[in-house]
Length: 120
Length: 141
Image 1: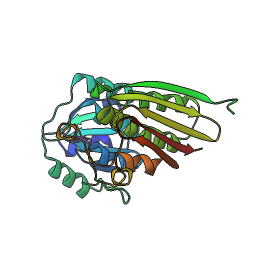
Image 2: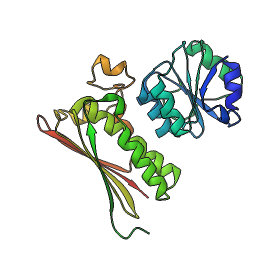
Image 3: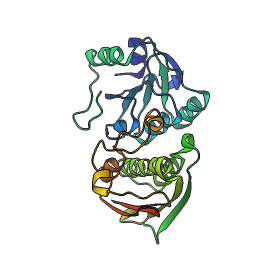
Image 4: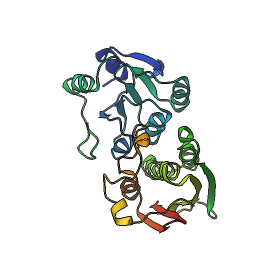
């Protein structure tokens, strides 16, 4: 699924990395616990979270994730946006709750992982 | 081919949670420049990142050393924190002594040590209550 499609489906505002909207992601992971996210390895994933601190971006960097979606109207700080830009990660924010955002992406064909434990 | 051991050393600041992980980011960049595969780099980065977070959460920081050879990448994480009283218990998924403020930051789910073991080929824990902990993780190349 294209990152731009995710933004459209979730009515999300892209905060950085607009040039990468045509990149594909093949799986998604949703959690507010970064250690759970770190237990999940999959290429080209998108992370959905309601947690706002720089460790969210660092976790995405470690996992080689392409995109982070902040749900529940959470807004990342300028420092986080700068860190994401430096790391080539697309950030977006959506008013949707986690459950709704996951449901929409799942029903449109984006899957979780068969391995790991963090597919909340 | 590496002619010798390439060594990177980092001081992990225990005072600043927001900067935790900076050493792991640097290691990731170094390994990428050295031409290691994305899979190896990711395993090292995640194992070291979890270790770095643990040092900040539990031990007021410490020193992280990474030794790179043609055969392996070895991460040595040393702290002078409180030590781990029961290593077997600490290794259980879901067990954590982290306080609520750490959980609100997204850590303390009791996955740190299990993840470190999962992503390394071997992990050795040397710990003494009241003196500190040294964790040595090896990823074979």
